[in-house]
Amino acid sequence: MTQSSGATGSDNLLVDVQHLKMYFPVTSGVLFQRKVADVKAVDDVSFSIRRKETLGLVGESGCGKTTVGRCLLHLLRPTSGQVLFEGQDLGRLRPRELRAMRRQMQIIFQDPYTSLNPRMTAGNIIGEPLVVHRLARSKGEYRDRVIELLELVGLNPFMADRYPHEFSGGQRQRIGIARALAVNPQLIVCDEPVSALDVSIQGQIINLLEELQERFGLTYLFIAHDLAVVRHISDRVAVMYLGKLMEMANSDELFDNPLHPYTRALLSAVPVPDPRTEARRERIILTGDVPSPMNPPSGCVFHTRCPIMVQDCRGAIPPLREVSANHWVACIRV
Image (tube, rainbow, N blue to C red):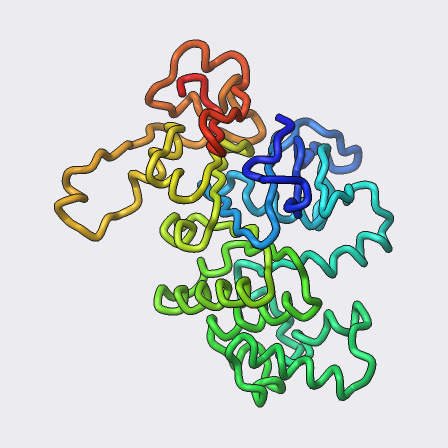
């Protein structure tokens, strides 16, 4: 697939991912280690993200969502494929050039409890990117910027001297957001930023992310497994299964008209507040377990659990094709 899914023009394109693969080698032996297999965490994934939009990336645990996000930032060097950021191939950049480019790309981690250094104060955590990228010309400018960032995410400046253990989970995630904003990035990878938080706090963090996007023109890759959250915040949604993209469409289109059987199964598991609607709607129960990424099925990787599988599904890998305007599906039955 050599498309820029959902992009309306190259000038509006911020990120373009083409045929991305990330394989982790599995070795055997103690002294003379030899590779015996590969874990195919991401296997030939292509998509694009427009400026100022939010692309939601969803799927079951272990499907490769987080690995995609880390390859996007080149925190993991992909096995093959290209990640183009503003037209530049990140894989061809020298280490110094890549480090400079990372000012434009930041990440908010899933767990606010382990992503912050317990030996550093909140102010030092937020200010560290300013030091690394030499963005503060004086101590006064550094201090003023840290205070500005704390206020930006809804924290009191006097909290700058506190350590992470003195904050709640929601406050820690706000610190992580402030740290990501410190270098004025264009793209932020949000790696399940609310999954470790109480439901009452999740809404506050989602609202904060939306406000910051509106104010600074940010672009998000929003990785999550909570479909209700994804529908609320995303402009477009991509569905992953076992390292591959199954379906991609505008958010309302995907939730109102899911075409891939895996997407339909995921959405059928989302509870509906109205008990009458809940009682009437179809439930799709998938049988069997998710296959191992070390030994994925031939053909369509979903065929071992698919309720509409036919013999041809065991053969060729279905391409992600556009079945209607900006609606892409990898299924020969659609």
